[in-house]
Amino acid sequence: MDTYQLHQGALLCELNANVVHRWRREARETAQTLSAFVPLTLEAPVPPAQMPTATTSSEIRVELEHNGRRVNRVGEGGVI
Image 1 (cartoon, helix red, strand yellow):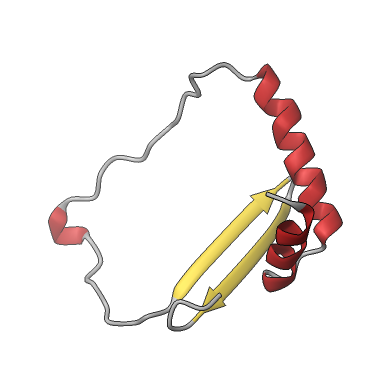
Image 2 (tube, rainbow, N blue to C red; image 1 turned 30 degrees about the vertical axis):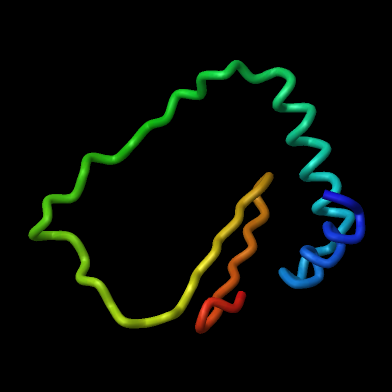
């Protein structure tokens, strides 16, 4: 991704481009030290009777968390 695209994406998400650059740099540095296998802890599956019912809402929610900072975005109709 070139710098212009990164800045445009950051602006669309109302993020500071410098923060996004730092996250990318930290991800590259971390990727060099991680093994290919990352263990995950998963919750037990929800039985079908307890699963939430589908809605017709077109609302999209995105939540990002990094180093204790959380960004929440909500959009209607596929626009975030």
